[in-house]
Length: 108
Image (cartoon, rainbow, N blue to C red; front, top):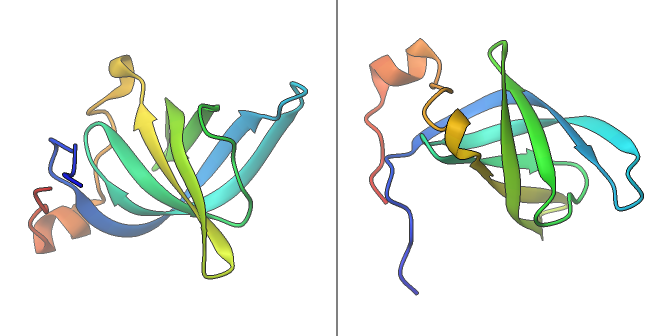
């Protein structure tokens, strides 16, 4: 299967705060660890499943952006979620300076 990503990805390990709603509309929040970041999305480790297609608010380095959950799979006792930033939020989040200075982005 061919990878559909077009943006360079930065491998990082930084905490994020998350907010979403469950199927009944109840507001939920939690924390996660961002594993990689690109202009259009990210991969986040979380302790619980977040339904696919859920709207999500992600706070990273003091900035909040909106995203949609594209996948969420169980892996090694936790979950890994792939998220896509809404178009108006793409390119807003940047990896920490220490990551940008020491690591070249990975092209998918």
